[in-house]
Image (cartoon, rainbow over all chains, first blue to last red; front, side):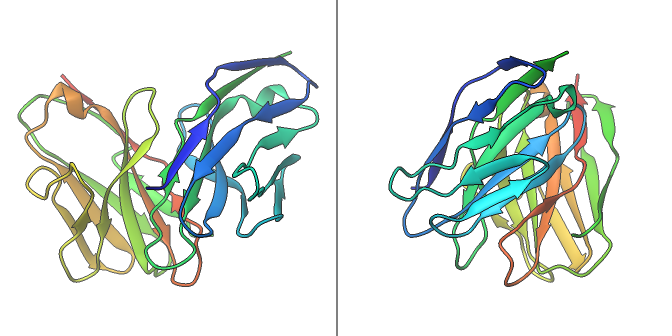
Length: 113
Length: 114
């Protein structure tokens, strides 16, 4: 079946540090890949997505590239801010038919000043 | 993207009671979903709310425990029945439109069962 594996958190960084949150997936066919972010006390927001191999999703300084050869979709940001502190979820869905989202376990990011 | 609201935003309930959560979208959408996020955990799909017909439940979730209604294309309810402390979670609705594989989430309902 389809599954998503994320690096465990929390990830603790100082402001302006480089961020990488690893995400790998197992899926049949060619899924679409997503990163969602959940700020404290809030619901999920779509951060970025990629729908085919070698696509790069980007938003708010975050980037992730769909790597079919390594079945990965790692999230990166060059310089994190305190306001980036949140839980980040990697997810996938099939590109056809029923759009069930399969989520990873989430990675908590803590950025200190 | 659609604007999604949920009511209530949070509630504290006694075991054995039921709570109905509402999800309202500001535009017509094809698909509506209900997810559960247990404390410190990821999201798990409960069911797909189908307009005008019975919801489609995922493995481990049953209609008697989580009855769902979807009377039109902009509104759905999820009821958590005969609650126990294990039902304490955040319940989120999400929506998607045909031809688009993005889902947009409501703010969630934080439920605590004592």
